[in-house]
Structure formats: structure tokens, C-alpha cells
Length: 327
Image 1 (cartoon, rainbow, N blue to C red):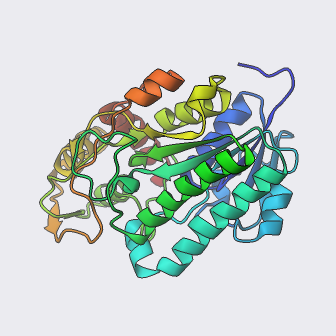
Image 2: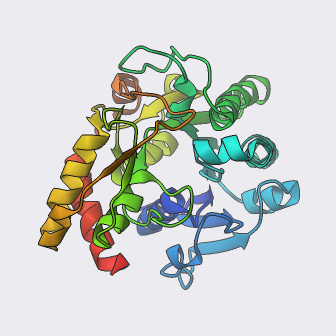
């Protein structure tokens, strides 16, 4: 798909894991891409391959500053809002900063996008919004009460987006991400996601710690499935498909024990000693939901979503990337 007139996409959090993958993908489709990032969790090395691209522009700024948001949206046709402070444990430790970034920053971006008359505002929502809802699979219209400050902020995002659609006519689509993983996901830091963290530990012959007995399950979602959903969200022409939220997942679940088994299997193809690394089981983590599984029927029906990567297929790709980039 090559655009004759190059549309401009603003990607907030464009130096992060998901944002930098989206940046690479849309530059490849000949979009113009503006990245807004304050590098609090994103990395400059994620952008190094784009800096000389004439269709790429980097704005170092913070979504908590409305002036940075106003500057970034100038000339943008679409916004892919990825900027946020993720992590349930971080939000429990520091709810104020999580709220400032995820709620105040989100409202700043919505307001700036409205005033700049962008065509559509697509934002990263979260499966944490399902909270204490017991039913599986998770369907978009049935949620429970949030179990963490982070979950509250992501639900508030959905409420604000809905209001901006109704009150101001801003087209919005929320994508409820389910445990996204893949290339460029940071294995370092106190709040690193489980897959890159475990990969790095296995590669160093360190025993990963599983919270609980390993039977909690997740709908692990490879980055390329997420990229597909973002593209569908900005290209969708069906008016009935906008101003709503969609689960962004593969539609299957695997336990943490399954995850470890696959990781050891695929990493052992590079280094057989990894197969001997044992796992440690610890306490359950506050704010965690036991099981997560998405229904993707709404996304299939309304957007034509067709995810290509299961957990195992995605892990094979991701493990290869980490092996070549972490050594």
C-alpha cells in the first residue's frame, strides 16, 4: 500500500517497544511519521535507523505538557497514541505519576488532536480494564472493577475518548492490548515485561521467578498482530466501526508454565545448556488477574482483523531477535 499523498501519523511514545515498531512499519508504507517521546521508558536506539529518513521527525517532549502536544499534532492526519506509563506494580508504587501521564497526558493529547482536527485518534487501551470480571473470553462490552491504579487510568482513557467522540466529533478507536511481546521489547529495569526478562535470564543461565504456581494464563500477543490492528484502525472506512474499543490479541491463552517451556525449547536451539536452567516459583503479585483471554470476534467482524502469529510462532521470531541483539 503506497500513498500518493503521504499521510502524516503522529506516534506518541514512538521510541518505546510498540511505538518504534509502528514507526518502522508505517515509514515502510511511505507515511510521514512524527514521533513524540520524552525517553522516560523509550530508547533512542529504537529510533536510530529512522533519523536520516526524510519522512521521519522526532520531537522530544512530554504529553504532560500541553504545548508539546499542540506542537506534535500540527499537520497530523492520524494519531497513534502509545505513550503511557505501563506496569501494574509501578502504578501501585507510584499512582500519582501513573495518573499524570496516563490520564492528564491522555487528555492533553485528545484536546490537541481535537483542536488540530486530526482525522482519527487511535489509542492504546489495556486488557487490565477487565479487572475482576470473571468471564472468559473477555468481550468488549463486559468489564469488571479495576484491580490497580494503572487499570483505572486506562479505563478513564476509554471514557474520555468516548466523550470526545460524542461532544466534539473526534473519531477515536481504542485498542485493548493483551500482553504484547516481540522485538525491541526492553528486558531491563524493575518493570520489564515477563517475556524479554525471562529470555535475558535464561540466556545468562539465571533462574526466572514466576509469580505464583505458573498456572495463571495470558493471551500473549505478538507485535505484528498489534501492528495489523493499528493499521486497520486508521484505514477503516466503516463509520459503524469507529468510536469504540477492540480487543487486540490472538484469541488464545497459555499459562506461564507453558511460556517457560516454549522459551527453553526455542532458546535451547541456540544454546543447549539453557534447557537445564530451573525456574523459581514465588508469591502471587498484587493487582494481577488470574486468567486473561480475549474474544477477537468484534475486531474480526468490524475491522477485518486476522492475526497471523500465535504465541509459539511469535516466540520463535522474538527469541531469534533477542539472541542476535542481546548477545
